[in-house]
Image 1 (tube, rainbow, N blue to C red):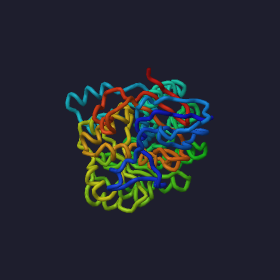
Image 2 (tube, rainbow, N blue to C red; image 1 turned 180 degrees about the vertical axis):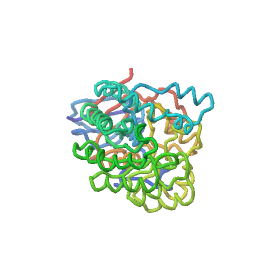
Image 3 (cartoon, one colour; image 1 turned 90 degrees about the horizontal axis):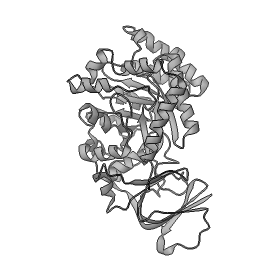
Image 4 (cartoon, one colour; image 1 turned 60 degrees about the vertical axis):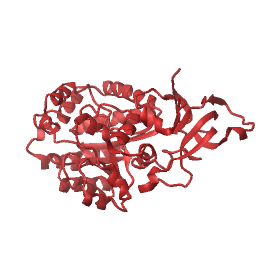
Length: 415
């Protein structure tokens, strides 16, 4: 099937060099093409050119962009969108002065979500998660990574991962699954953290691998959660079972999570609200993508990751939503892009690259997703006409995304 999109005011995010990620000063370069048409053939970008040079093209469907801009879909490389219920009571606790750490010490946070998830059926979990999937799809996300980590037992972790597999099979999104049994220590193992790590390594990980339920393994390597030594052990076992590492690191303290992630060739290290020169140096020349989650810093009132220092040192960064019930209950990647500019001083071009190509890289998907590149999968959205690319970040709550296409087919349209 061929799809022709005509009268595009500007194509944004073209990548014609074959790069799988952009770093340093290159992040501020966003290749665009004005007054354009674009052709999709068999779900892939096939051609584009200027409207005044458009000849006769036999297309099965013709879409008029009406001078709106066309962007590659967002690639959200860090979410927890499979969960049961919500945690708005903790929202009130935060308003009343309790910190994230204090709520966790009182048995709240992740453990509350684990209790709710245990009582929720797989079908109900799937139904709740699909509402969130439809929400993020309409907001421009085309690829998403989804973590487990609210099970904290073998049975419940497998239940979560089976829900993620169902999402992968039934939604138009490109989905990657991450096993995060090391999200917190289960209530039953309180005071016996070493035994819980044994359970992850000896029972959970082999069970996950046996069913082929995950692409990655993640560990919350931070103060009050899992140590560098425990993280390294889990990554080693995961690697033997074919699961590449991804790390929650340096959200609450300088934890050593960045360094252990780099040592084990983790695909990404995420959060990074607490970063110093040693962490930035460790990431130099590494395959590991630092991934920033400004939605969590915004919601929790924490300091933001030092994006300018990282980019200035030549690193690439990715942006992700951290969509979860406790610290970032939103999957709006456009808001994440705006927060990156407003609070971390990333230029709009840097933020868009971080949320598209670099986000795809942080899921191992940038060969096929994350930019407008001939031969890549045709995931894109069309906006209303705008005065500039910068307006997309500047007018952060104006409903600008008008039509969404995934794998060459329209999945959302706004009248």
